[in-house]
View 1 (cartoon, helix red, strand yellow):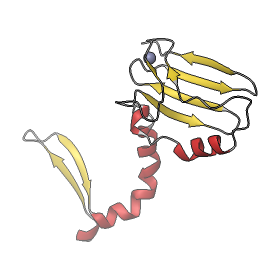
View 2 (spheres, protein in one colour; view 1 turned 135 degrees about the vertical axis):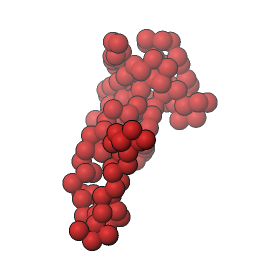
View 3 (cartoon, helix red, strand yellow; view 1 turned 120 degrees about the vertical axis):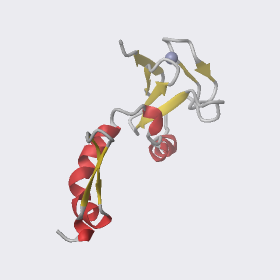
View 4 (cartoon, protein in one colour; view 1 turned 90 degrees about the horizontal axis):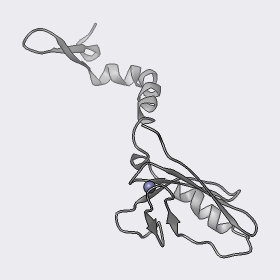
Length: 134
Ligand SMILES: [Zn+2]
């Protein structure tokens, strides 16, 4: 194994393995193998860490053809948090996690982790929510 393909085992003072470091050359070779595992790990991160699907939301607005104007107000049925406009509210308490042209907007309440689904129908808006149980 050449130096460029080295693996470094980092041990603490007692000799216990703490971490494994790969040389850049080796990492380039194995990155595509490791990447799926990193993405899996990403799933467990809070929704706030992933970017909001703002392009989908823009399309959602662009194709809006319902009988009433779009309202950016979001409120959480679980903890009572409420904003007039989720896009501009201070601290951004509601994170958009999904948007589709069929009229569905999904928000995540940062305060209590509740998922709020706004289902926009032709002439009315229906709300659904689910709160995780710990
Ligand atoms: Zn809430």
